[in-house]
Length: 328
Ligand SMILES: NC(=O)c1ccc[n+]([C@@H]2O[C@H](COP(=O)([O-])OP(=O)(O)OC[C@H]3O[C@@H](n4cnc5c(N)ncnc54)[C@H](OP(=O)(O)O)[C@@H]3O)[C@@H](O)[C@H]2O)c1
Image 1 (cartoon, rainbow, N blue to C red):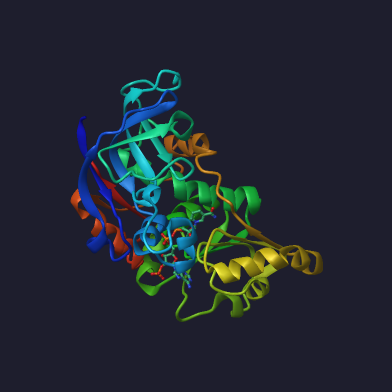
Image 2: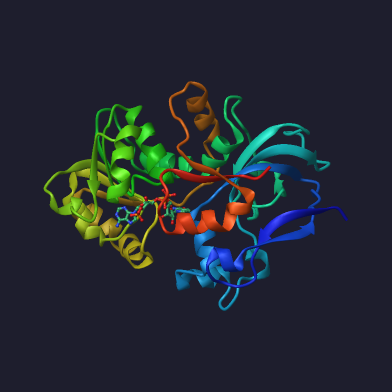
């Protein structure tokens, strides 16, 4: 059996302690699968939560005391080159440059090779580097589905992106600007000046100002980190405004899901939560990329040896944009 290097973990803890670069069997594609030589991968919330085993509520999925066998790999965004295809795969051939959010399929992009179902994969745009491609699928789809599918963003609207300095916010601001929106970003102080360079018109330090109490109102709020009760966000919405969250504290999200219909009926303001459909509109992202309308915002690239460090760096939220790793 041919061998390869891959990061795996068998217990929870700090990434540098539990993630080990092991020599494992190189995977073989099944009939409907594609073997990819991984060139780049990106770090996500999943990597930090899975290795640390926190928040504890996530252990229902990950494994109570230690990670379940199938949850012991990390990495859920990938860009690479097709090395081999299964017998029934027609859409891809050896040498194709591909990328994907692998969360609907399996985890494990922090490895030299990875097998994925062919319908998980997309061809990369010609002018994307592997690092750029790895940074895009997850965050761009969250931003797109929040702003357009749930938020129905219209021209010239006023938008606020809470947690705007992260992966989703740095792409979300660029997409909102295509609709001539005025965009305010909220994040920690050290990211604010770079956020303005990215295109935010205004940037608020969440430790100094509570945007829900400033009196300013928005047509659309995209929240990457729901930390307050849904009732607080209503204050910051214009009449018929929309609040769309992609994630945050589970108690607050449950409250939102429980009351969203009632609140909508009483206030005529809308509360939504995005349930990500991975990779669904990547052709649209390819189009925007080719026409130069959006660009990837990279923190890195870091080396394959730095994967555990990069996951901790992400978990401590010191990054701006997407933390990416060059694998090969
Ligand atoms: N809906 C779905 O189907 C789905 C699927 C997967 C993931 N997700 C969620 O999508 C989100 C990923 O977003 P992302 O990749 O952009 O994350 P990210 O890169 O970690 O960015 C989040 C930003 O929020 C900031 N932040 C933290 N606390 C904040 C607060 N109280 N107010 C304002 N900003 C705050 C962080 O900076 P500091 O910490 O420095 O303040 C960071 O810059 C996560 O919440 C994840 O759980 C959703």
